[in-house]
Image (cartoon, rainbow, N blue to C red; front, top):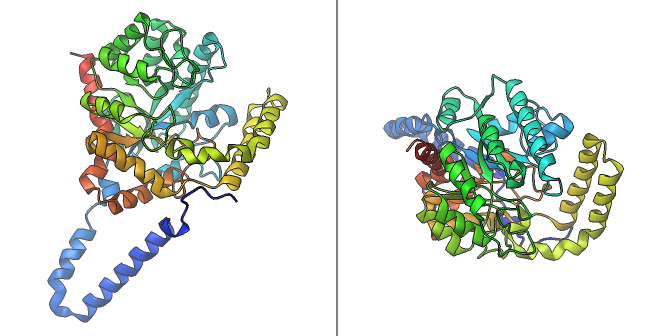
Length: 421
């Protein structure tokens, strides 16, 4: 296996090791208490503290971007089962202490706008149906208050975000219909320009918002739909900032200062987003975290060729196509390794230094990055690991709670209030 530059196995704090260390510390405390009756008051204090909810239990934990709906629609993925593939299901969300997740309604830009529009409604209906299959665990989120309600009821709120403005087919009525169906943010572009907005993934990155693009942003503000600037060109970002009447979100972007990928945000953009009241949600994808990881691309050129053949061979069998592509994803990870966990923490720390801890959140991109997530963050159950990592970086529990979901909840409320202003 090729190890990413800077990889250090010793720096990886696994949940197993953390649990063992915690158990050992607890055993030691018990032994000391039993041998020292005069310290019973201290023991009662420790017991009282132990009865308090943990930071994870006390916090709203909200991941703003997971691509799990593709598994639901293509493979009949049952969220109620714990799977040995994929990265999000109810058992693992429970283990991760998740309060809510935004499921991405994603259509490739290779589809025509009309086809993407139709497909978006099919995926929306599939998500709604899957939530309905698990009423004891899930609720369909439509407003920020649904997250707190879900947490009070020991459930998880599932929200939806539309990934790519091409799916509205340049029609505000389509946008309104998607909102009515439950979509609560839209990523203005995906990896190519739309007729009305520029993308960071297009060869021409100079394009910003057209006049119609500004109308789209204004209509989203009127509806109470969050405007997501992940994937957009720098010019589109600044045009959107100038147009919007409510805070923006970057649902799944990282820091360009640490990895010079155009999908990431510059410090200037992060600062401007913070002044707008918005939040950058850190993406877990290896190339967005560490540009050095891109040097491994030649190591799996043959896998890219095999993937193209799989898509051709199983063009009419979405389930088998997904299964075969997943095998290639795992082979890619086996060859190149994962980005060190510390590198993910670097992005959280940098964003917090630039924007302030009130403007950073989670946007993992689980189930959307071909299993190429950092060491120690292989699926959504690993959120406790992230908490310990941030604590090790001297983040306060209050700031960690904000990053886990408090900041995003604030933006959701602000967008809802702006819609009624």
